Image 1 (cartoon, rainbow, N blue to C red):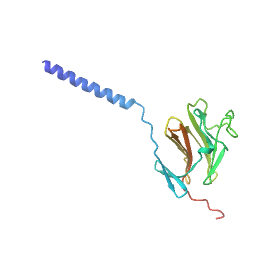
Image 2: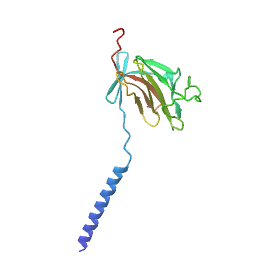
Image 3: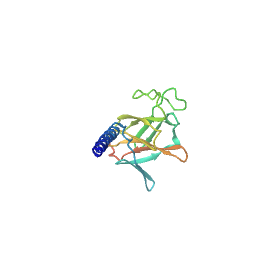
Image 4: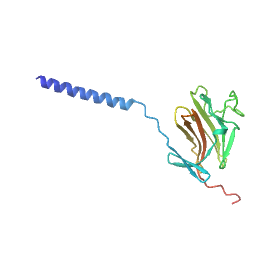
Length: 180
């Protein structure tokens, strides 16, 4: 009889333990997606592979301010790379951001850590605004939904110097034909 009680208790413990484990696994927040960035130098051209996409890359760290908290921005407001123009969107109250503008696509007030908001103008005249947190991760990469080309910005945190490297990204694309 005592053996049966022990066996029943063991089965109950196994069922309860499995239920608790399943519930914990089902309810816990998903792990953040990781972005793998590979730097490739071919001659004088820098490429970055971000996920499955291959991009021309231009390091613009020297022209970018990335604070510990607040809005990141280009010191000369806009940078054109491979026919795509990247323009930072800043609140008018941000000191140092050239031509600060009130963006309406997404509010950045109260966002913890560093963040970036960039409007991208493509060779076909279309525009898209990307926004995202820069802090709290080694690679923060934000790319457009636009295709031919797709463009974006990558922030790489350098632990040793507690600073960021910043890259503009543009996929190879078909150049618009003139006069056809």
